[in-house]
Image (cartoon, rainbow, N blue to C red; front, top):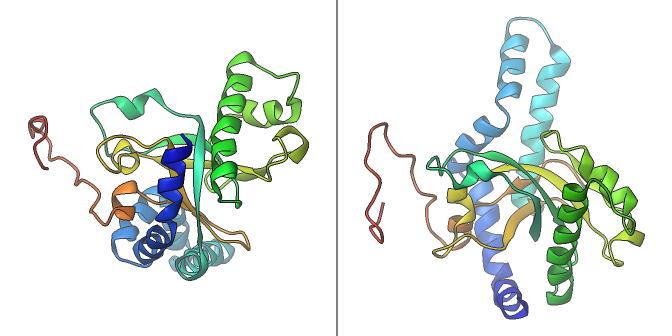
Length: 225
């Protein structure tokens, strides 16, 4: 794993430029609409003369993503809770996931993040943990909440300053260079606010695979879509 992480981090500056550009591009708008469709309804209510505070909330969310495009940091997160549906034929549908990331992005800390994700997954499966009881209580609440991040107790994370993030992601976004990556690219702002999973294809300078039309046959192995 150390070799994989080292190679990944060596390209982090290039990845960061592509991640920020993607957040600022029209291509991100579709992702925004999917992740925050509830906020669109709130804006409509505002235009009808209701819910002024709701419009402000949506506006602040947009501003947060604009800051992310200018000042976001790219973190490589480990997966705590995935979703079996990710491996279905619906590769472009986004499903909830729980991931863990640290702003410390060197080889040792990223490898430690992957280990922490495994330990928290075990605590979740086992319904608790003697060595990390507070983390176990945090991960036990597995209901998805958009843009939720929860700081983890450093005394239970092997000294790693880390947080757990609720995200929604598709298999097409996790597959970067031929196969799913061990890590989830996450763009966060150091001052807080919204965060976003950046598709691996974007980091590799490619487009995210387009949605298949209804009735379209699956591509042949190795064929380009």
